[in-house]
Amino acid sequence: MVDAEEGLGLVRPDGTRSNIRVSGLEPRARVRSATPSRDGTRAALVVQSGPRTSLLLGRIVRSGPGGEISIDEPIRIESRLTEVVDVGWSGADSVAVLGSIEAGSLEVFDIDLARGSVAALGAPEAPVSIAAAPGLPMLVGGADGQVYEFTAGSWRSRVNGTAPAYPN
Image 1 (cartoon, rainbow, N blue to C red):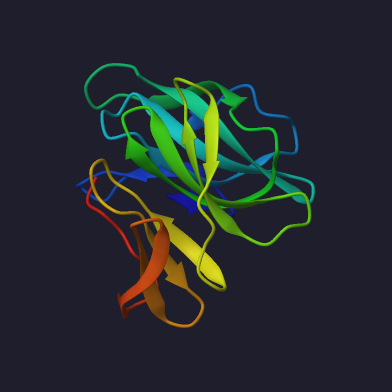
Image 2: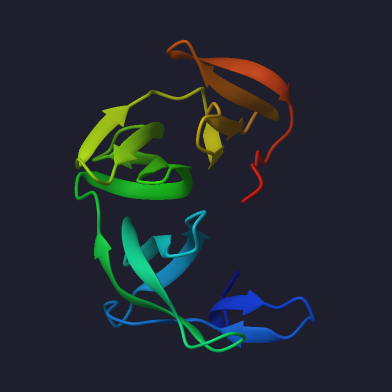
């Protein structure tokens, strides 16, 4: 979870909160969201620095069972994106990103982390959130109260809703 006052944290099953330290960020950078990979070894971070948001990838480090968790030295993984709104893991080595290039409108990008390739997939009108999972279609929540599904190369309305999600 991300808290405006306390930063990035984890709420444990017993209800206690632990802070997650992120090393290597610029002094004024703020983590807006953190999405762990399904294997729990990496985190995709949406980080705001001034008016710009960026997509970073960091290694999750655990100091033993039940111990502290940190994210070490995240690196920027796509420099052409000038705004990043949301991210989901679409595969073991790929992320789906809701963002924009320069002053363009928001669209979905599929980024292959192993190859460094970026595929623009467009987006339905007024996208606000994204969900992705290996082997499943990408979902986008729209400002119009619809959840859209990416199938056969296009976005189709699937169901009424606002915040699509896949279990992690």
